[in-house]
Length: 322
Image 1 (cartoon, rainbow, N blue to C red):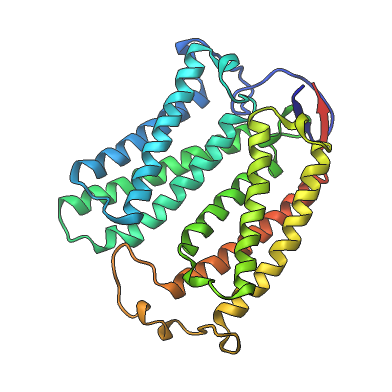
Image 2 (cartoon, rainbow, N blue to C red; image 1 turned 60 degrees about the horizontal axis):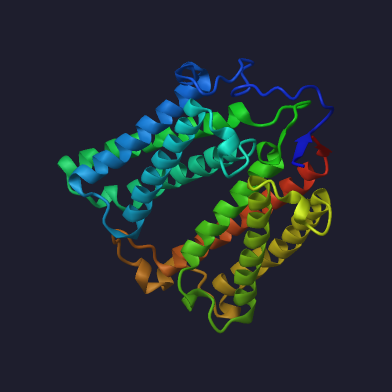
């Protein structure tokens, strides 16, 4: 039996589209005329235009360009699948929980598009010479921002409200799980090769912290998407509370050790950016080691705050079976 979450009391089991009070129409073209359907059409259009503009001039060289291109193509593809499922009324046949999947995806898509909207112009577009390619790249960035806003709007519309029966991923702790796993993935991307932490046990511990917490949060997300929360040897609320508490404690050590051993001269770190030779020149598609260390420190702090909020909000949830 699936686990659903409510903050107060059970009021109804009838779902509503986008939290706007209008019923969701599925298995009919009328689904596209509803506010949520129109919003998803905007998501589809903006991501399609973004990758089409970039593809038409081949403006996605390098790792950062490839990341942005992947983001727009991935978001376009999954949004199209969601629209097809709702138009054909195939939610019951979808392999994942439809109570949790759309909002989980919308949250990930908003974060993906946000990252592309920041990374693509700062690491690629600014290095392009004036001309057709630069104009297309700037336009693609604009449509990426539009897509980010559209996905974030869907999350705001469909998240859990007090008194509603809903899937766990629509609650604040569920959405925080998405943020935690996404930030961890970005941390892994910045850590890259072992050069930033190799032969330093304290820094290797920090990498282990990121990995352990990512795996646990990803398991919580996957269990909800697969409606498999009942396979755990302990109750799901206990698992979530223990996960949040453990992650806070682990990240508290990482937020101290990573800056200490990366930026303190006493522990072999580099306190100043100009001391890193790789940061002396500006290069397209390249992030120097000192900037990567700083990015990991900032992202570690962000994830610590996310886990703290997760711990607080998890204590306020009431789980019921339906």
